[in-house]
Each structure stands twice: as C-alpha cells, then as structure tokens.
Amino acid sequence: MLLLRPPGVYPAQGDTALLLDVLDREPLRPGARCLDIGTGCGALALAAARRGCRVTAVDLSRLSLATAWLNAHLHRLPLRVRHGDLTTTGPTPLEPTPTGPAPTGSSAPGPAPTDSTPPGSSAPGPGARYDLVLSNPPYVPSPRPGPPPPGPARAWDAGPDGRLLLDRLCRRVPPLLAPGGVLLLVQSSLARPDATVRQLRAAGLRTSVAARRLQGFGPVMTARASWFEHVGLIEPGVRTEELVVIRGVRD
Image (cartoon, rainbow, N blue to C red; front, top):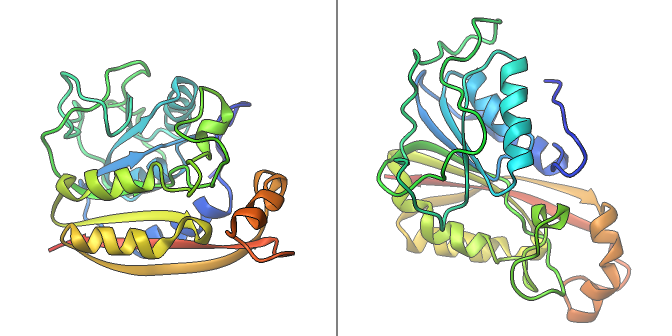
C-alpha cells in the first residue's frame, strides 16, 4: 500500500513490516474494534481497516494524525483519528463508534470513508474494550532520561532502557482488551522483550513471541552504537538488532 509520509512522520520500516506480517496471519472478524497506538503514517491502522476492522488511530503528533487521516482518505478506508496517548483522558469515549457502516473487509475501492474524523479531536478516555490493539511504540534506548521533547525523535526515543513507553503499554493495554482481544506489539531486543512478556503475563494476558527478525542498525541505532556498547546493551562491534513481535491474548 502506497502511503504519503511528509518529513517528520515516522515511516513504515522493518519493524512495521514485521508487525504487518503477523497481522496478516491474525484471524479478524469484520467489524472488529481496533486501536492503533502511535499510528505514525497509518500503515498498521489502514492494514487493519482493509481487513474490515473499525479502527481508531492515536498519536501525540498532529502531523502524524493528519498524515494517517489523509492516507485513509486516499485509499478510501474508514479511520477515526485521535490526538493523545494512553495517559490522556478526555470527553471522547475510548470505544470507536463510527457514524457510517462498518467496512466489509474487502480491499476493493469503495465509497469515501464516512467515519473518518479530522485530526485535532481530543484523545480517547477510558471506558471501552477492543478486539485488537496494535502498537509500534518508541523503543530505542536513549542517553536522554525522560520523554524526548517534541520533534522527530519522539517517534523512537524511549529513555535509557528503551522501556519508557513499553512499560506503560504493559500496564494500560490489558484492561482495554475485550475477552478474546489481542495485542500485537513490536520492539527491539535492546529493550528487553522478556520484560514485556513477563509484565503482560502478570496482567493476565496469554503471551508469546509471534515473530522475530534480525536486521542491521539504521541511522539512529548506528549513531548510538558506541553508547550502547558503553552501557552494555550490545557487545563491542555488534551492529544488528532483533525485532520481536509480542502477542498477548485476553482470555
């Protein structure tokens, strides 16, 4: 699927591709409720919409939301966008309740999406349950403590251990899942996938590693390789990471 991506919006890369491979194998019923956390250009959200899901896409970046919304419009797919993150509450209910009919699951072009909402709406608040939650969150370890300032690095920087957002997702996502609901999350081996699996299991999800893939460092990881070595995240000379997709199911 061809997607627009202006400068400053996280592109669909190897981690997105691996998560899309797992999503393609996930059985989904038409009309399933889906939440995409940190949607970026909307690649995951639109893939779920093409499968017939009713999708709500959330991001802290208004530019990313505008991009995802425009990509949905160009591909004639229904998508609801919301500004914020998992810590944000507001008057908007968390459950996506589209005003138009649920998509049929066909990938053939159809009418323009009737339940797309323009970017700038308030972020979801607590209250609903989802059949599917997708997330390609920031997971790159950073020497900067705490959240990064607004800017492109917000799409990948995740504190010294890479778990600034991952730990929050492990706490906040399980209550959002309906019975039988599935979480699909991708992260780097540098951010301790074992900790994600352990926390999700402690939260009551049946959790497993759904896919792994080794890839070379990109520009951000390469620029930090010396720091990774210094703090013991990689062995000297290593310039690869393993991407891991973790699947959690609420029974």
